[in-house]
Image 1 (tube, rainbow, N blue to C red):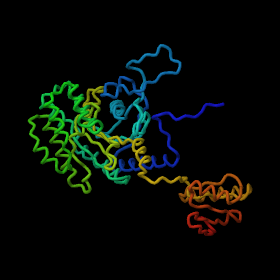
Image 2: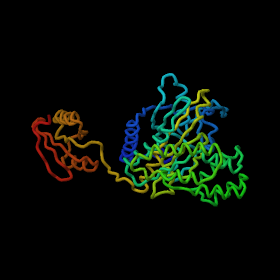
Image 3: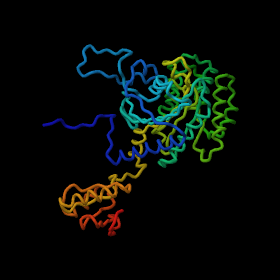
Image 4: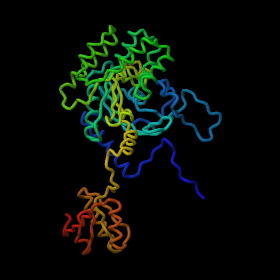
Length: 432
């Protein structure tokens, strides 16, 4: 007896019609990215462990590579590891290919990433990400932060999967606020990570985590009050003016957010963009703008697209300052939501639009020629591989979701095309 096939938790496999939907989503994001002038690229699947390490809580989720029969295997900085996202490898790629690139460099890429986390709804160990980023040398205009928000808004409108909210915040606002409370710089990243869990563990859970970090109770109350603000981005000026924080870092974040609001104010249909002061994002490479997108009807599912600005990510690889801003769409995560909630109608349909039947072995050249003519006209055609009863061939087409069946006769000079949905049948003398 052979091995019994088994599923592996956290490593999804889609059925053909599900994969077709995934490819459709990817194509929509590709098309939108290119409309804004972004170019495609790809990085290798592995990096040295030293390249990926020290990025917040993620380090303990990194998969490393070793041979099945490796002797005395030990982990070191030059151990090969699978990337857990595409941002760090992108920074390495930019530095490595610096002389070949034109800046600002605008790119998109879709690849798999891997994380050794516990699989659960919307969380996978192997998953597709679609990243859109722009980087520049020395200084990156805040305009690009706004452009990323515009792209995200355009993508979800085109996907038409339901109402979404694009949450925007700024790490400088958070850092400046925590600094004004007297929270030590060494603790601020831990505080940000704790606050980032607000929608998962609630106020009480965040309160407990902050207490464990040694944050004074008075400051915890102020942090929770601060995080309660969530309103349309257009109302950000009045809200931020009402928050009296005398801090230079806070003022810089406020200036950036107000500029993003100014750029977006001329855009129609931007009511889904909100300022959410609870938004933190746990990864420690964010330095400015941060964004996340959620579905209004499924807030408990969490983010399906998120990102932000990173001014210092390339510092590990280069003395040049290469700031960037971008967003990552969780394609596999989004697919799991679509499939579990039925957000898109899936049709078990073949890519072919017409099945060319086969009467006999002698007729195969005529069927092949007919299929070729369909394809030359841009119509996807499949030829039935052997001469069986026509009823069986029609049944095959119906089962695969092929809408039309072509019957070839008179040595290929006549083709009758049947619409399986209406049962109508027409005779065509010349496909040319």
